[in-house]
View 1 (cartoon, helix red, strand yellow):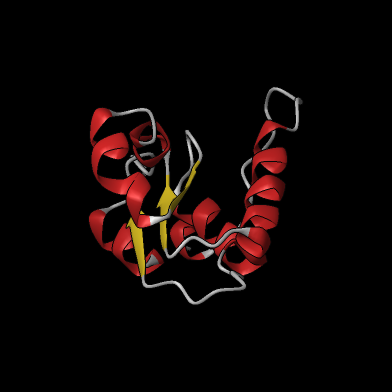
View 2 (cartoon, rainbow, N blue to C red):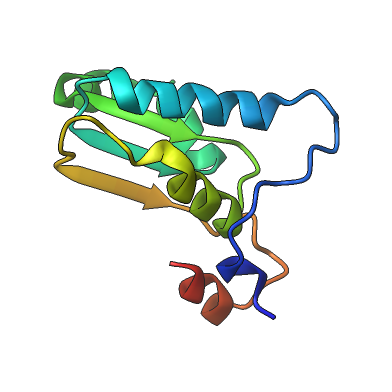
Length: 114
């Protein structure tokens, strides 16, 4: 069975609830923000918000950054299915970057997860 198509949250290996807390914050932000562009994915997306290019190019576009370090395709699928795309305004664009952490999967399996 392809793990990339089975939407699920990651196992909380540390037991700190960090991932679920971030997801809950993103769901709340989706329901209250006026953002028109969503960046969603793993740590590469997450870290983008701390870059110069984010400050220079993306902040003025009213972007949200819903990146979570360590996320796999199946984790982002779960987040999407559980409220992170439920914006109260219509999004103009979604930038998705995920699959980097699915090193145990084939490229075809990662693609199927999209």
